[in-house]
Amino acid sequence: MTSPADTGHLDGQTVAVTGATGNVGTAFLRQLSRAPIAQVRGLSRRQAPDTAPYDSVFWHHTDLGTPESATVLAEFLDGASTLVHCAWALQPGREPDLLHEINVEGTRRVLHAAGTAGVGHVVVLSSLGAYAGGDPASRVTEDFPTTGVPSAQYSRDKVAVEQLVREFAATHPDVTVTVVRPTLVLQADAASAIGRYFLGPLLLGVAKRVPATIASRLPLPLPSSLHLGLVHADDVADALARIVDRRAGGAFNLSADPVMDADQIATALGTVRVPVPGAVLRAGLSAAFHARLVPTEPGWLDIALQIPALDSTRAKTVLGWEPLHRGNRMLPEFVAALSRGEGAQGPVLHG
Image 1 (cartoon, rainbow, N blue to C red):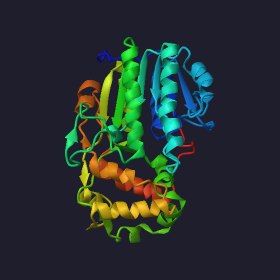
Image 2: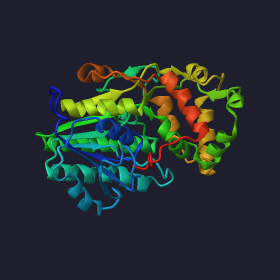
Image 3: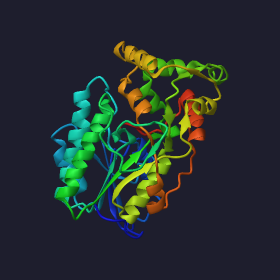
Image 4: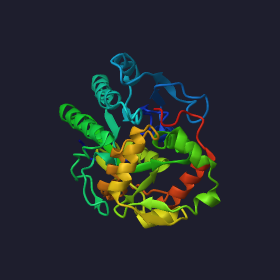
């Protein structure tokens, strides 16, 4: 992996973005629409609307979970200077083999196509979910072990993808390779989509019917070990643009301040916390998942309760990155957007 270079690499580039209609992908398209680049190419499973920021993108469509995607990927990456790989499927959580095929084998196909096409800079969006468990109250830098949380499908697949990226970097020494590890990424435009993915239609429908004045009076059951870092999708997009502009290689953590403990989460939401053991909360989530009341497999809670928070010093130092959105403001704004049923016109999170 190469060292960071000076700025100016965005000028005249052809940037190819997978998962371009997703949460981060949409925000990155907004960022690129203001940059002096030659062309933006987008890859998604489904058609994007003919509105900003999608309307100026050259689109390709395929399902990365199928071998047939190789033909589309070859055309998509032909002549591209930079690849930003944001595509990731979160559901169906009850079909781990399908998710593995889309996310891990799909990434393998993307990297193979990038190597064949001679793409000069490959940026892969990973996650805090790749990190090993540790003290949730601590902050870790990019050299912390990326062995994941074995009980979580999402974490296992992120670990597998990062291994593929390391293998790609080793066999393509002339390519700048970057791994980006954000914490939980939120934006109001993705509120309804994120709600559907993690709450499911039943609980999401109930949540939308509860007036905000009543919801704020409801106690929030949270374990004391929970610590939550957030980052806004627009701040992630800004970091991606800086990475591409500098052709910066290596790994970058992305998280905004503050990292909130359980009491601060409740305070940010204008309510009070009821302490509950993590094991009890996990048992409840597991029961709800197996009863098909929620689509969220309990491994997600294991990630939340085990993985440390992120130290973003390297992104700030190398990229000059400073997140504009604070976590304790993002959270209530996101929940308010969720209760109002807000969301973008594009198929956000369906990258």
